[in-house]
Figure 1 (cartoon, one colour):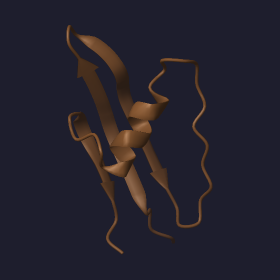
Figure 2: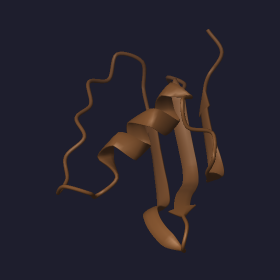
Figure 3: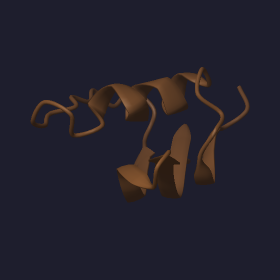
Figure 4: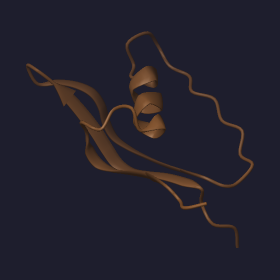
Length: 68
């Protein structure tokens, strides 16, 4: 069975004054996966991508690429 190359587990981000940008996002990707991120304006798409890229480190939960 293939191993995930990236996982997010229960990731949430809140900005002052208590505005939830994203809440309890969990996802995993297999090698070679092609993904798209869809949503309304202000839904948190860019925030999810910034967390995945390692640019935004201020969040709750776990987000990590696998070694290799």
